[in-house]
Length: 138
Length: 138
Image 1 (cartoon, chains in turn red, orange):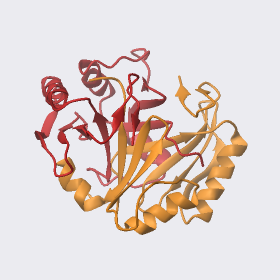
Image 2 (cartoon, rainbow over the protein chains, first blue to last red):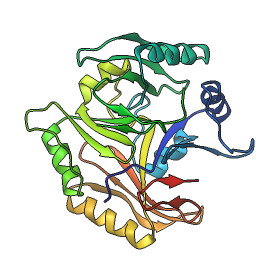
Image 3 (cartoon, rainbow over the protein chains, first blue to last red):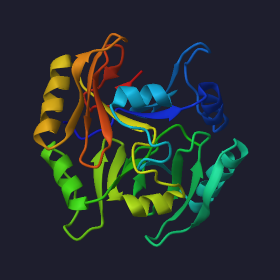
Image 4 (cartoon, rainbow over the protein chains, first blue to last red):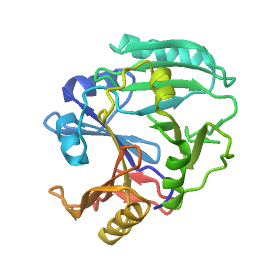
């Protein structure tokens, strides 16, 4: 198995609402209004929004209804950018689980939770490198 | 917010066991035995393994103990590669939730579940492009 992730699918309960949330953050897709799945090209991978019930069945797992141990993160180039993204998420209707603040590992981060309960850490990690195309290197 | 994912963290209950599972799939990290987090460089992003309790607290969410609506996927270049990765996951101690089979969207996929209950779809999608470096395009 090559060392890479191709796709991360977020299960949602209202696809139009979820799509509108990510679009309010500035994301764009080629999805048509009647589509039952939305794909966002994210660098060399894809983020999808799909019905949580469908994703549960497709994944062969049991949905216990809350968070299940996976958190995506979006790294940015400065603490100020962390605060800016957190404010964008708040304006889009996200819940701010943790405002931007210095971390014990020497960075700065906050967390927003999307309209389906999925948390995103927004982080500035001065030990990692972000290339011009947004790719992140250890 | 730029349209990208920097990091996906998988919450685990036994870090050494989880690390050994992904290493058995062929993944490598620079983690030292005493580290409390393991980072895998995955193309232009990173996959981390970290204590599920710590991740729950850090993410500002409530862990309901099972799956929580997020499924990563690993796309490959042929149906045969799907079957090969599924067999690698089985040999590494994963549960096979769904054996490789044709899908209704014209591809071929299966699902393995890692040692912490996180499902991975393994898919061949003939409508998407996989570059030599493994990056995936719609």
